[in-house]
Length: 298
Image (cartoon, helix red, strand yellow):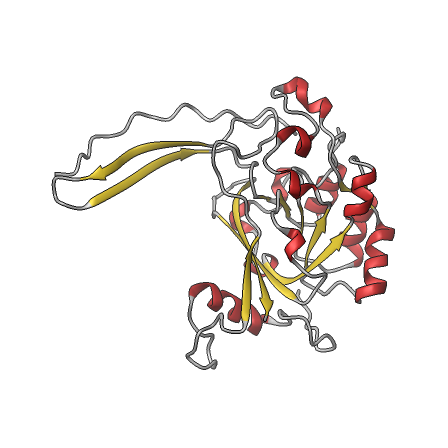
């Protein structure tokens, strides 16, 4: 018989004490251009054809790139947060003759590859379960600022850098998920190189050094462009030394969520691909783990 005795409880999780889509008919390279491709993208993940599409392999014409770090004992969290914990509840062959595994896990909302819901820094704005899927599935763009971040690990991505990207690649599409490649993803999971310090606890927060988004650039994205979300390959949308988390506040007041600790941005082109960022649907959550995939035409 399968042992159904309740497992021993996990230790309590500690709190984390730190504070309409237009089409793109003029851009043939963009995969996601309207609600119909949104359905196609979801169908790709589900492994079935969208309505009206031939019943063939939905990924035959696409390459899928996983932009997610796995959760384990090495996953990077904010210095004041508890890390990811996995407890084995059952593992092995049962008396019934079948193999069985089951685990329990404990995690802070904001660690690893995760999403910040707007309510994280903006009272009354959307919680995680309230973020529309249309904001989490859309055309992706990668703004590569790795050279600037290599010169200054506290670099904040500027409006000028975003506008320079547009001059080279065209306007940021409506509904886009804007991904900032700082180059710091290559340091994962080395906490000292990735965060600027390997220390933990409240005293480590003042020693954080990594790139982020300048508040002026956050305001420009939120007011001058109609984007779905912003993401980057560091631990926070604000740079490490931030104490006011202004980029968070500006984006979230506009109900624009943020994706943090995004993986493998070096595998993506500047544009011409789709992004699916589907989080755990936590009712009332301020954030949570997210599985992010990019779909590139072959």
